[in-house]
Amino acid sequence: MILLSKKSRSSAFTLIELLVVIAIIAILIGLLLPAVQKVRAAAARMSCSNNLKQMGIAMHTYNDVYSHFPVGEYNDDNNNWGWACHLLPYIEQDALYNALTNTASTSRMWVPPSGGGGPNTGFTGQTNIDNLNGATAFGQCTTNTGITTPAGTPVVSSVIKTYICPSCPLPTLKGSFAKSNYCGNMGNTAPWGATTFGCGGVLGDRNNGVLLYANNNDRTYVSSLTSISDGTSNTVMIGEASTSANVTLSNTGSGSFPVWAGGNGGGCNGTTSIGSCLRIMDANAGYPLNGNNGAGNDAAFCSKHTGGGNFAMADGSVRFISSTIDPLVYAAIGSRNGGETTTNF
Image 1 (cartoon, rainbow, N blue to C red):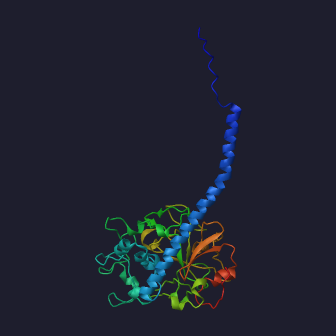
Image 2 (cartoon, rainbow, N blue to C red):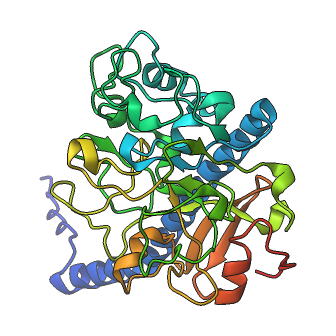
Image 3 (cartoon, rainbow, N blue to C red):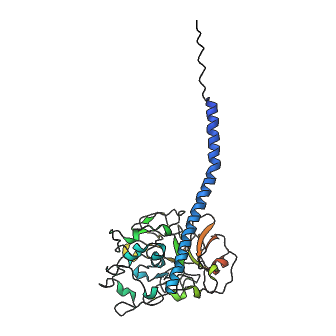
């Protein structure tokens, strides 16, 4: 007679063993999560730095073509078109630039003579850019959103990856406007006799930065490599813009927001945006890097990278500047011709 052996008891985790395994996994996740977050933050910071590097190269290419940098930002009444628009052909965005400047359209972005720097000539024998508004042949400034791509969508809604920092929590669009996390440095000069940042009385020849802003109907202002006497590696050209005192996470309603297509859309489209150019902190006043303590700080550079922000210098290099930088040093790297010899920052 053949005897059948008993089936061996099937093996399985006990409840205690299962709880131990879960606890070990939880501990490992807790240990690894900060490391993963650091890797992601480092990757975002590197991507942001690469964006600024591309813009720095594009700026130098523009300077090679025109012998000066582009207009930082011009005339609030005409939507403050600025450097980010004029740089489009040099960051492989020719189609968008062509749509913005389509001469067959009566709604287009005005391009200053010779790329900027001088009287606003070339239309109806005048220099006052305000006369472009609504003119049949020169209606370039009727509205930002009226300029469309061949597909019929507003050009200003186009999201440009080069102009976006991955660390910025702001939405990609506010209304019809795509954001930009980068603004030009207009300098460290005092706020032109006013107590807060504003457009009244602002003239480009009072800016001592690299990308100049002027609320002037008759002229545009530019700088060039040869005008930077403080050293191109010691002078900020472009910095980051993100959330601050007046720049909020809301993608609707009023409130400031950084956009690449114009710096002041409020006159035509109801969307207020911060300027294409911002201020470096002057030696005696506000606008500190990553400042969030006053209404004027929507005009200050701000980054969401831990400990500081990325900046493109005038030589095309990219530097990470600490939020704890000495105010006098920060002011010094904001001017192109102040006579400072700052190298340690």
